[in-house]
Length: 361
Image 1 (cartoon, rainbow, N blue to C red):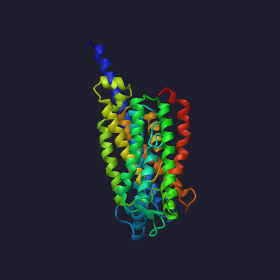
Image 2 (image 1 turned 90 degrees about the vertical axis):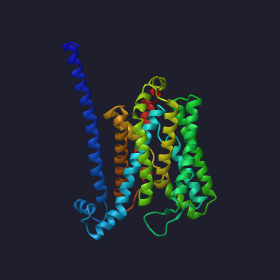
Image 3 (image 1 turned 30 degrees about the horizontal axis):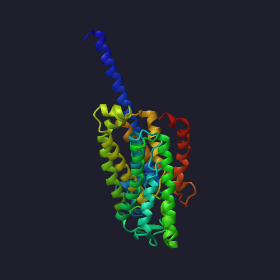
Image 4 (image 1 turned 180 degrees about the vertical axis):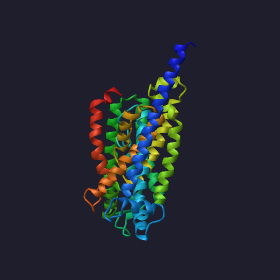
């Protein structure tokens, strides 16, 4: 190799190192922002606990009162927001890749609504939920999280199978997938309403409150379930990061690179359905987090899924935590439903993407 060739190779290597360094810098900044947002979220509230007292309490040096507030009330809520936000961010990122649809998300494809229908069946028909008289923090208590999760997964899986069938056998366009998601959302919402019609007042009130979305109703056992499912999904998604990169060039190109497109698609959608269903089962419907997070981070890290997946997860956590903190502080002491806040954030982005770019996907 001549001198010019060597210099050109070294230049490319330097450019690639700078590229990688920038991506890692974005991830580190996101992690730092998430940590700061988490500490602020634990600190924010009517009790007047300072940030320093929060830090001391987290490290075991706080008072009994601050420990009760931090570990008993605020920390479970913050951890739920972190884990659920990461899960929804990853799910949206993977769905947009394997369906090659920039508007794909658990909420826009009807997966969340299907999961909500399944959870409603569990709460009303199988007695897995009832009015919570022991605590004023939540109006509903999930007495059997396992049956709720199973029913929610079945409901989400039905929606997923329909979307996959349309994508696989009918070769529908990205626009048609979203229309199918709207139809499925209406179908499952109608089913949920029909079940509520035959329920008693307490059950209806419990389901309606549950559907609003609430990060404060989870206990540590339920948080552990969400964390385990999300962590396993994260490992699988990161293991397939190169396959998702290949998908960016189209299905045929991915096949030519040795990717088993059908297996990656079906397995990915099944895992996305499971993760979204588990999140919905425990915290209610939280819309658009999975839509917003990947699109925000594509502007910084591009479509390289080695970095887009973790960046989407971190951004999803930041968005959900920020939305929940806003909901707690905006009209304190009233806590606004998190589902409504994320919908107000996500709906304008959805419309922007719909009119700007979905036809080019």
